[in-house]
Length: 305
Image 1: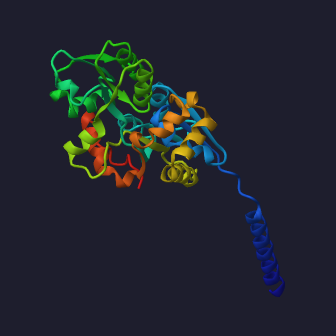
Image 2: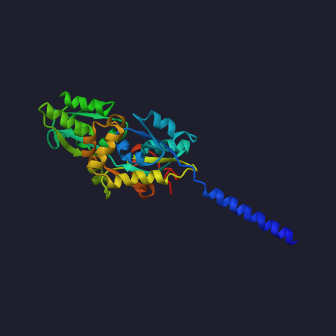
Image 3: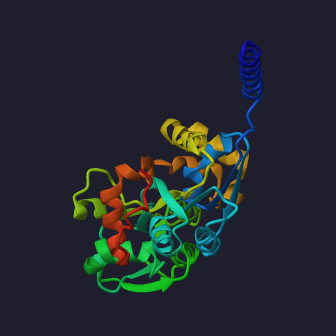
């Protein structure tokens, strides 16, 4: 009996030592794969570059985002995407949940004088007719516009139309708006921001914060990988961002890769891009409100709790 008890004690002790030895082994470093669109969302997630073992892939357009958001076993732990796109795909794929909103709209009308759109005979270049730019524009401003509209496929096309004199004003996104104003000045034309669509949206909806939830961070549902470190890195960079830190971060990654004109303009327009980190659970009402533009109901489990 005593021998058996001692044997059991020795076995238990050996097991405990073995477990202690195992627990003392360094944990495997967590790695993250992130897919992110260029432009404002890329700037909003610059903090991911500071998180160890993180690889960020930047993509232009929504084709790659659409394909990857539908994969339950996709290679990306996190995908940054338009809120409406993520919600629409989640209804069918149930693969990526909304963790936090990081951009709150960056659309502006650029022209020469205030309320220029109310004048007969004027022209306005627009883009994204069936996407966020066009739907927001139609919701908050179109009814007041007397200028003749021309819709273009991309913001760069609207920008060129304005610079070439084919339009008197244009709907542009920052930082392209600032780059357009600077380019026009070089050619002797004085342009300025004559309308802030985020402020118009806020006034119409009666929200406390300026803007609408445009892009968000989506996390793979059911993943065992803890993304707290990654989200913390993104949030910390946004909270502490200033002209110097943004400029240095853009230069480190590369303006071309991020899809912005240059580091200086990206830093200068940071505030105008309405980059804010808000946990999805704290932005539920705004998300639901925004999805109404697309006739999308907020899926019950889209937002992480």
